[in-house]
Length: 312
Image (cartoon, rainbow, N blue to C red; front, side, top):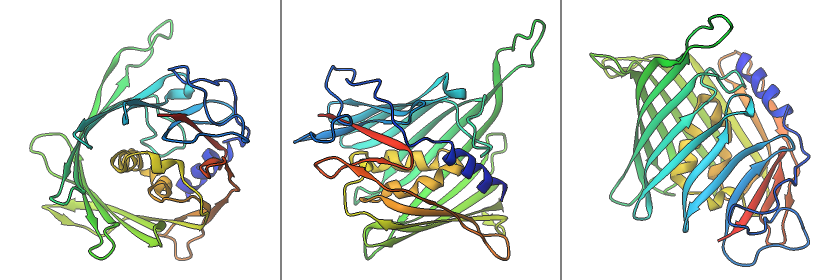
């Protein structure tokens, strides 16, 4: 339940009031969240996710392709950067540099994290595997007069994700993760298995279990979490404008990011729950919201986050 407590702290702390401090994008185009009586006719892109206190994400594009995402870092003072490389019309590589919540505390870590993910597709063009190399850097202890030492490598890991799809619906059915410390001789030592269920085209339930592995054999799971999404609207989710491969990368960034699995859906859930499935009587923690929409029925605000669009 400790992890669920952090979920509550993280989400309750997000305000439902939005900031209008930035009315133009970096190209001088008007942003599309201010006047709900107007809107955009024609192609658009998701530009920002904001709260009243900070910008949660800024999306940059090279033509029509997503090229960079800037997210907050430690205490929202330092930014984290995700660079996206393409091969034709498919994402081939993602490079992240910055700070994440690796310990699932609900607070972005002071440790610096760098990872590279390489993307492989099957003969049908569907994302099939993601191979990741990740390094975590810690700063040295403070010395008088309380000056922290330089960052030094603390931990390196290698991770492989395998994605499977339903043979009847072609929707994402599961993701299997294998990971281990990047030392010689290298072995995968831990795994997770994630299963996805749907109501129509929308994700309705996600379960993810974690456990140890040895010699390529999965051991008994030691933790298991469930995420349920319901009361979907019939409008357009902002994340329909974001490539599938990036959405998967965002969900896999940390364990706590599984809660964002609804972004794989074309619509937006007005209710979701997070449940630790290990206790004999699991108790879900439930969150609800009402959404605002623009005249073109794109969702503009929900769960304390405002979504800002720009023309393409």
